[in-house]
Amino acid sequence: MKAAAASTGRIMGRVPQGEDLLGYLNQVCLDEGISAGQVSAIGAVAKARIAFYDQAKQEYGFMDLDEPMEIVALMGNVSLKDGKPFVHAHVVLGGHDGKLLGGHLSEGAPVFACEFIITKFSSDQEFVRGLDQGTGLPLWQGLS
Ligand code: ZN
Image 1 (cartoon, protein in one colour):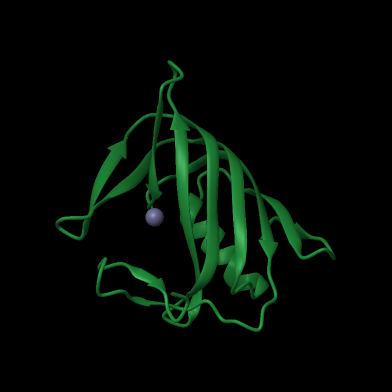
Image 2: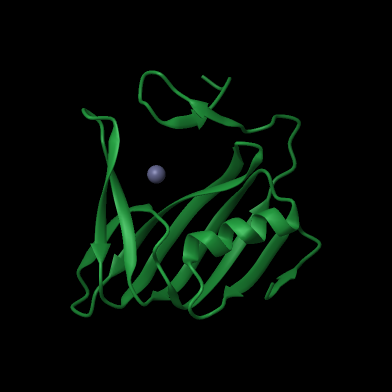
């Protein structure tokens, strides 16, 4: 893994070219034992797949962006899902004309270049995702 850990509980690193953006961030959290945290990143992807959650149908619709895009902003969190670290991230992507598109980051975004920072939280509270009946989403359990 190409990342440098600092004693402050932050990891700052690069996603290697060609790696899947979401898949790599998940792997960093798994390798570093991060079960609660915050993720941010900037950079560029060769293409991307983002999702929009249809609240009425309670399912994701996917949008494939088959062109190079800037990662104008990526923000997300880390919690546990199915016993493993799980990164939930949203992205704002910019095309060649500067117009922005955004949504829920899905696998299918090979990185051109990306710099990320993950802040690890230590907490007595575990953040574990489970099915929320009202929304149909895997939300944090026991927090509302
Ligand atoms: Zn989302």
